[in-house]
Image (cartoon, one colour):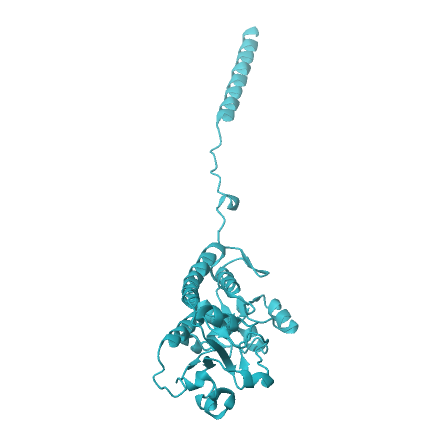
Length: 319
């Protein structure tokens, strides 16, 4: 009897020891480590986006862009960009003329914009409040770039537009690079003009007396890049006083190509001037200056060259 009790007691001890061993073994088994995935916070941020320009914030590169400004359309393509739509008045470069048209800044084609809302819309003037609110409801970012007053202002347009097209770093660098090349050509013209021609002249935008006055961007360009003393420098807002027309005797006249050259022969305001008599009248394209695109520098170079070349016609008019 006593032997049975000892056997029961012995089995109980063995059972307890076996159970403890299993628990220790189970406790010693470690769980496999789960590799931690890298969080988005560890990723390097995109140096280009988001980009903020003129109160516009773009979180990524815009895929569709519509320009309602002929000036900005030209600059977009100078920067190597592309558009999905243009205004009714955009005509350069040639490749944009096949794009869909969306009216103008003053009268945008709202139905077309509702049908194909772009990521970004460009304008040179503010849209009406109603049009702006409608575009905002369509989640269209509207960027307004007013005409610049000087060369530094034009550079800012190139750089800011570059940022909207390609982001903070890439776009800024591209805008600066493109404009630096233009500025170098501009400064070369200024250096040449500093030698002086010792002549006076006018920049005639329209007849009879709509010309670049002293307060205009074009008036300053004529003096700085062509070395011509502006006969209209004392006046403002593109208006030469009609009562002073009798005193107008420029040595050189640059006139917009929209003006018929035969006009000058029929008016004493111009046919009595040295510019007319000596054949120093040159037509030019005023649009690049109004748009302030790269073509403006090219046109200035042509105008500067005209000053040093003899007029082959010798009849007071340059065709």
